[in-house]
Length: 183
Image (cartoon, rainbow, N blue to C red):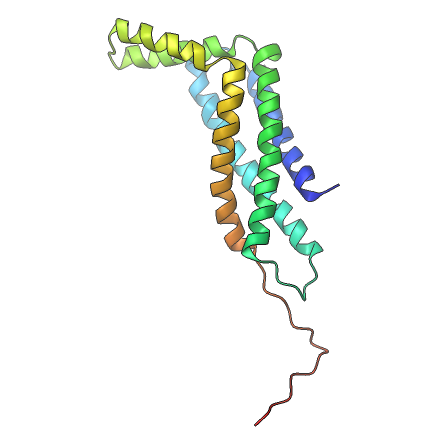
């Protein structure tokens, strides 16, 4: 199996496990605990994603003969494809999660946002308008589309950074004699 698919699947699977653990711990059913769950999800998703993207690029780099360059473009290509698979699989899981596993998740998220707006003193008519928009944006299909778009954009940015550190110059074969000097 290709490193792209392996590491993309591992990233999505690990993030799915984190989501399910947070759900089972009750952090996705209480609006007051949702910000904690979101912080945990963000930090772990970033750590898992970056780590496994690096391992995926390193795996592909190790498959390239040491006498060949592993360029920035090659490293970028691997990181982008790994993150593309991770994003697609993660979005698919989130769709299933919000549609079937925890269909009340959107309501909890909306309640948390309303509570935050009330705490800031936002007028109730503005909250009602915002709630209508939030209800539309938290539907699983809309979440999948926006998750795919933002996931790709964020992962391309991360891939650009990772690729800068994962490129490798070709190693000259030590058994090859140096070229003769000409005068």
